[in-house]
Length: 173
Image (cartoon, rainbow, N blue to C red; front, side, top):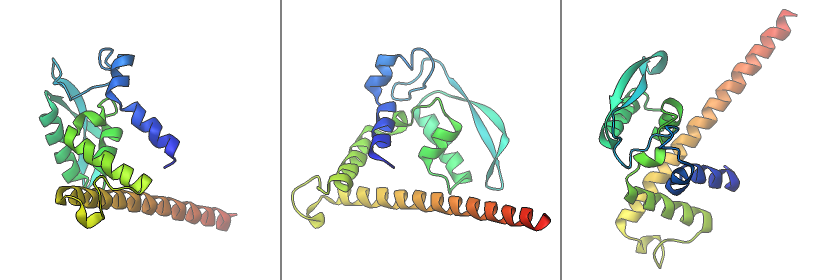
C-alpha cells in the first residue's frame, strides 16, 4: 500500500475527523467507542459451507462487546477473511477503529512506526523490548503476512481463471 493511501485510510477512521464532519450524528457511521443510545440494526450474512450467501439475518447490536461477539462468530464461519476486511465488507457503516480496544491501537501504531522508520519503541535491540511488545509485533506480522498471502492467492486464481477463459474463447473461434 502506498504511504498516501495509508495516510488517507488513517484519516478516514480518525475519531476527531469523524466528530468534525458529524458522521455519527448524521447516521453515516456507527461508532462503538461510545455505546449507541438505541440498538443498531445490522444485516449479518448467512454463511453456508464457508461462503457468505446473498441472504442475511437482521441482528440488533447494543454495544461494542455484542459487535465483537458477532464478528467472532462471523470470523469462525469465514476463517480466511481478516476481521478488518469483514467489517469493511459486511458492516460498511461501522467504524473499524471503534471496535479496537485503545491499548491495541498503541501496539499497531508502534509496529507501524518500527516497520516504516526502522526504529524500535524502546532503546536497544529487539531482545531488549518488553515481551508484550515483541508478542504484539509478532502477532501483527503474522496477521499481515496471512492477509497478504490470501490477497496474492486470490489474484493468482483470478488471473488463472481469466487465462483459462481466454483460451476457451480462442479455441471456440
